[in-house]
Image (tube, rainbow over the protein chains, first blue to last red):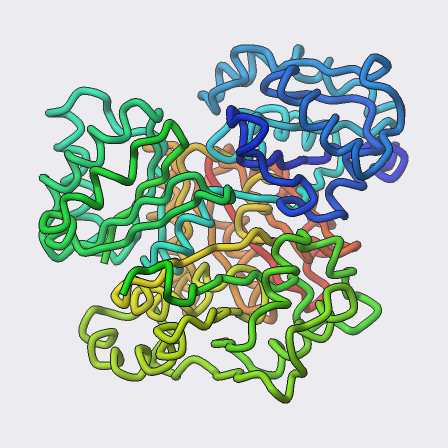
Length: 265
Length: 265
C-alpha cells in the first residue's frame, strides 16, 4: 500500500495559554495560522496528551473553521502513560503494539491528529513515540505551524541561536542543580552553545535565584514568562546585572505562568 | 524613561518558501497567524537580513492586512555584515555603536521589526546581536509566532524532543565531517540528546550519504525537506533501513529545497 492511500499523522500545535483563565487566553486565530486551523478542523481521529484540553482547543477552532463532525462523533484517545517520556528503545519496543493500534485507522486512509496541552507535540512534550510508530507504518508525518515556546524564548533572549541545546528539567535538589548549572555553563563558555531549560512554575523562582547566584558574572541569563500572552515578558541581562537589579528577578516570576530559561554568551 | 514609552523590537518570522518560485509559495495566511501579520503590518522601521526579501514578504502581508504606509515610506535597513554571525563578545562589543544606532528610533517610541529571509530571526539566522542591543537599551523584545523549520523537523522526526541540540553546519571537508558525525552520535547515544543540523542545499546529498555510511545501524536518522510547502516530506528511519532502502535517499534530495537533518535514539 503506498503512503498516498494511507491517512497522515498531523502534528497540531496548541495555543500556549493552557491553564490560563478565559480572559487571559489569546484569540486562537492570532496565535495559530489558518492553514493549521483548517487542517485541524478536518480531523476526526485524535491522539493527545489530555483529552479535555484537546476538546477545549477544538471548540476554539470551531468558532472560526467548522469542524468535520461534532466532538461527540470524534475519537479522542490519550497517549498511553508509557508514551509520555521519550524513553529508551526497550520501553518504546514494549509499547509498540499499543501505539500501532492507535494508528490503525490511518491504514484505512483516515487522517489522525496529534495534540499536546500547549505548543508543539513531541517537543518538550509527549508524542515522539507515536511519531516513530507512524514512520514505522509508512505514514506521512505532517508538522503544522504554531507557537513553539522554547524557540520564541531563544529568539527573544539574544543568545546564540546558531548553536543551542534544550535540556528539559534540571535536577530538583539544590546542590545537584548547582553542579549541573556549572557543567552547562562550562559547555556554553567553551563551545558557545546556548543552554535552554524549563521548570514547573512553583519552582521557577528558586531556579532563577540559583542561577543568578551560581553563574559567572559575564554570562548572559534570559528568562521569558507567559510567551504569546498579552503579559509576555523577556528579561535578558548579564548575570552581574541580574545581581544589581534584584527587583527585576523579584517581579518577573510572580505569576504561575510557564517560564523558559536560557544562558550562554 | 520607562520601557512602556519606548518602541518595541518585534521579531517577525517569514514564510519558509524563500527562494521558491511563485507557484511553489504558500499562502502567507496559511503559514503565519493573523496576530503576527497584523503586528507586522503596523511597523514602519525594519532591520533585516535582506531588504529585497523583506519587501517581498511585506507585499504578501499587504494583500491581507493593509500596511501602515507605503514600502517607499518605510525604513528598511540590512543588518551590518558583522552582525550576521552570533560571534564572540569582542565582535559584538566593537559593533555595538552601529547596532544601537539602528535602534535609535525606538527611543522615540517607534516600534521596530526584525526579519530574516526565512523563518524566525536570530534562530539559525542573523539577528541575535541586535536583540542583545535592544535589551541593553531596555526595549521590550516581542517574538511573534510563525514557522520555525528546525523544530517542525524535530517534531516530525520522532526523535527525542525533550533533549536536543542544534549544531548549525558540520565541517565541509569529508574526513573532518565524518569525525564530527561520530562525536555527535556518541553524545546522542550516551545522553539521549537528539542532534540537529543543516547544510547548504547543493551539499545535502553528500552529507546524507556520509551519515548513512558513518552512523551506527541502530541510530535513527531523519531528514525533512521543503517544510511547510505542499511538497514537504520527512523521512525517519533507522540507519540500517536507510542502507537497505537506497531509493529513498536517492529521491529525497533531488530539489534545491532546504533540508534539515537530525539523528539520535
